[in-house]
Length: 595
Image (cartoon, rainbow, N blue to C red; front, side, top):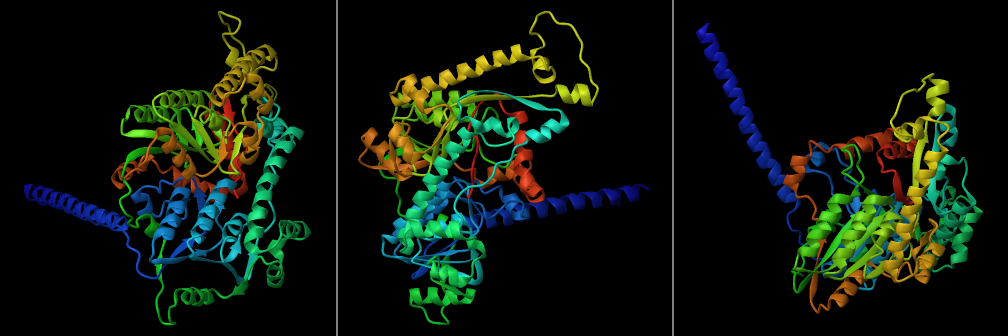
């Protein structure tokens, strides 16, 4: 028996030792894989940058942990706007890169201004005299807008272009809630603050229709102008296409007649065209650089002079860290305040550019961030660069800046506050048969129960409305102080109204239309810097930290799987879930539109 246990113990120890050795080898292999993937890239002579326009483009992407990538549990087609714009700039400045090939056309942009910034970067690339070609079997509206900047646009012989204009329909959940006995009680200030209407109405209000029509027409007008110039047609001709027929179902002859494309070809033909541009023979290989390659492409050391911090604030503004189930990036109030305070203390940072791409969120977290930015500005210049959205809470945190830049199609404004609480009295009393009774020391000791489960709660709602009114008054004060206006002037253009940035300039919500680079130049000017370089904040998580966190953050993968399963139902279901976690006082945009 002793012999048996001795052998068994030896076997167990051997297995443990083998597992440890295998684990060490796996870690070494894994580290080698990560190191090789992040190794510096050099562009070979006569190269082409291949930008695959297939996936989601958002302000910035973390890319997931290495373990997620290894296991295939992260969407590898997600792209960051910052990486794309930087890659295009590198391609412009690198003499070995002769052109850009835009491949595919099903890209989804998180906002119209995101698509515009990619297109603007490509237009700037063309100023170098280099070429751009585009090919796809299908172009979505947003991807065609971006690809229209190309010198030549090609399409598969069985392809389509979803050229249709901008717009869509909203979902309204009020009828569903009525069936199950739930009524949403809304308190808001601002006749255009329509975020509550999806659960309080069954159709779009006239005020909401007015603001949405204005901003969509503004974006579409700019897009038509830019596409028409690139395709050598008039804006009216392009606009008529979207009115006269469903272009997604048009034939190749129609696309060519309308000058939407130059030709329809088989995929292998595009290789011949690219080789012709590069002066290569039939048997020569094309030196290709992907977005990942361009991210790692070596450039001359730019760290000469003083540092300007570019702080990225993107996503919904929330009070606390989002649950692991959520995949979308968020602006966490406490963390952002801590970061901004550190930038204020950092003597090496001479100015800060706040890159805002947010529809807003928690009014309380927004005000805390506003306060931190105001204190930061007392020590060094703060310039805001607005991305796709800088609305409601996103505008609140922008207001104290020394100067505000925005893209022409940035959605901004939405200066308003709302509160939203469900009343379930019909559900619990009439449908479920639950009744309530009890005692309390004071009249409003049970106000939360009354708010949610009592029909006769008008006095409680009155107090809640007062709370929202004070929040709105504070918002007006913040904007008035930051923009050098009176509260009365702000109130005239506020009311929760959403503005496109090209209109927001005329009402003093934005100082000037311009890019992130323009904002950086302005920050250098305000800080009186002759030489400077930029550093992004917060820094992206390195691979080892991401590996340690990967066991706790599987949200992106689970969320992606849910989105695939639920389809169109994903958005309303997740909004209901988020409403349960949000602070009661919200300064949030009523909609976010991807294209």
